[in-house]
Image 1 (spheres, one colour):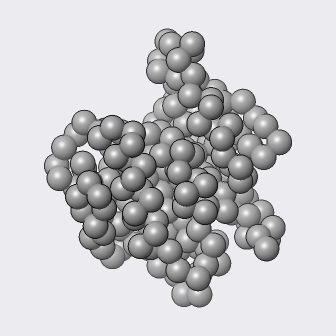
Image 2: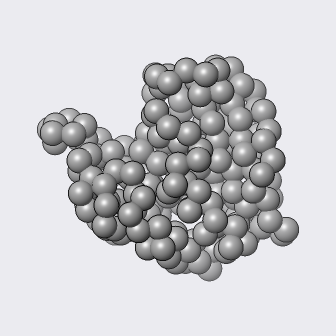
Length: 199
C-alpha cells in the first residue's frame, strides 16, 4: 500500500493506493464519518477490486488526516473529494464509492467526478429512528449504475432498488462485518458488469 498526500481546498487528504498493472479501472473509496480506511468492508471491497484487475485508492478526508474525529461539513467533504479524484485520475475509467458518509459523498459528486459507477457500502438512508429524514435524493441524483451493499439489520435503513440501482442485502448491521465473503462476491460481480459494459 502506497500512501500519497494530495492537496485539497480544505487541507491535505491521503490516498492509500493499491495499484495493479494495466488496470481496467480505478476504484476510489472514502471512509465513514468517524472511521478510517481500515474498516473491514472497505478492506474487503478493495481486495475484491484488486483481484478483478482494478486499482484502488482508499482516501482519508482532510479532517481525518488532521487528526479530527468529527467530520467536516458536506460541502467541504465534497470539494476535497473532487480535488482528490481529479489528481488520481488516469487513463482508466473511474468508479467512486465509500462506506456510510463516504458513500454519500460519492453519490453527491458522481457527476463532478465523471464516475462510471458508484459503490455504496452501508448507505445511511436516514438517521437511526428518523425515517422521515431520508437521504434518498442523494441516491436518486446519481445517473450512473449504483451498487448498495447493506446489512439487513442496519439501523440507518434499507435503500430501495431502482432500474440502475442494485441493492444487495447481507446479514449484519451498519458495520458490514458479518458476511465478508458475501460482500466480496457482490463487489466482484458488480465490477465485472461495470468493466464489460463500459464503452
